Length: 335
Image (cartoon, rainbow, N blue to C red; front, side, top):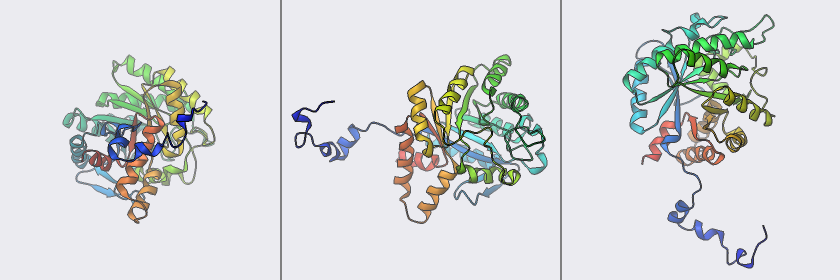
């Protein structure tokens, strides 16, 4: 666009609007609020149990009774939802991941306890098999170790239905199997769960940033150095993410997820611009661990860094953010 004389310095001084807090606030293009936050939680068997996670300082695995105390804090802070990730005991893992759809399984009991105690708190469940397989992959494998798509989808459908029966508000398939959103949506509709939402992990990359999460749920040791490149996306690809999102929306997803978060904000922006649908991003465990290490060593300021990192998601177009910093951010926003 051609500039007129009045567009040039000194008539236009961009710093004028930055001079005072009131004018900076008035022209802020994006705002972060408590309504944007989803808190991921790790739940384990037993009572009055908590376990620290070495690679995620400040984050703990909690038994259901202690998780309810955590949920009370989230409700008081105004955080709208949490996402549950169960820690499955080794003796309940199997080649066919039967524990994933056990109606009395850990995830299912956690959902029931949360909805009975805090019905207003949104409960999101992870639909994936890696916490339940002896090999740590997100699906059923053949003799060569390749994840079989359609067999895996059949089990994911059973898992999603068990979560819906337990009272989950949102099921979130994070496995990246082809066609699983349509299969889950069809099953939910057929079983009368017309209000159960699907948050599709549509653009989930085969990332190096997941390590601490795999430690947290106990799947890292099962993987034994294997990767998930045959079903999670190549970090080199962007157009492919748009195709994945389009397919999941056609199959009945209510909202879509980009994972990881900060290294893939360009994907968040493309998805939001292209589709204009509820778009979420996950500030994953590796992102948390990097920030936390720098904060704990005094290299970065805690509040300023957390809030800037989350605002970046909003600027990129995310409607909501799964973040292990949700509680800290909510406290800062509520000050």
